[in-house]
Structure formats: structure tokens, C-alpha cells
Image (cartoon, rainbow, N blue to C red; front, side, top):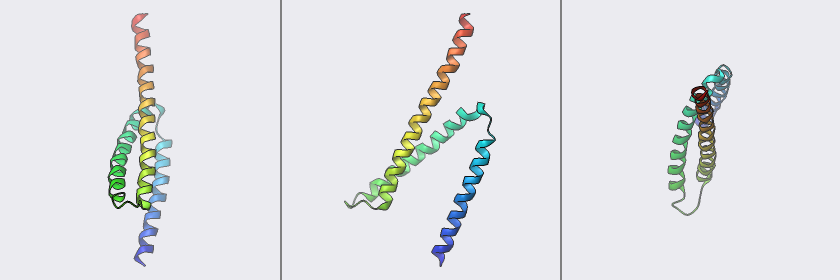
Length: 106
């Protein structure tokens, strides 16, 4: 019975997080997207560390379990998120630097 209660509570928190996240992101002005991406990169970095720790402990017995495969999937997705976030941030900074160079040179 406690498993069902815990599952319902977890699903409730997950659904509420989806609605809250959608509401927050939809109300963010475009000028704040790059600073928020830096925060998302930090969270993904924490996810990478957690996935590495979990995958290391699960693979020690020689038989990867479900948690190890989920950790691997989280590692891959978080790495893609971090790399993509840094690429977008770098491009935004190059665009800003280009505008400053054009103002100073003209």
C-alpha cells in the first residue's frame, strides 16, 4: 500500500513540475534566456556527476541493472544539453562582441 501512495505522490509532483515549468518558461522575456541557460547547464552538470556515480556502482557486479542503463541515458542526455548550451552561449557572446566591435570601429 505504501508503494502505491509513494507512486501517486511522485506522479503528482512530476505533473505539477511540468505545469509550473511551462508557466515559468512561457513568461520569461527573450533577453533572459541565455542567463537561464547557464543555470540549466549547472543543473545538467550535477546530473552528469550523479549519473557517473550511479553507473559506476551498478556496473561493479558485471551485470548492469535498470538503474545503470537509466544512468547511462541520463549521462548522454545531460552531456548533449551541456555541450549544446555552451555552444549557444558562445554564439550569443560572439554576436554581442561583434556588435561592440562594429560600434567602436565606425
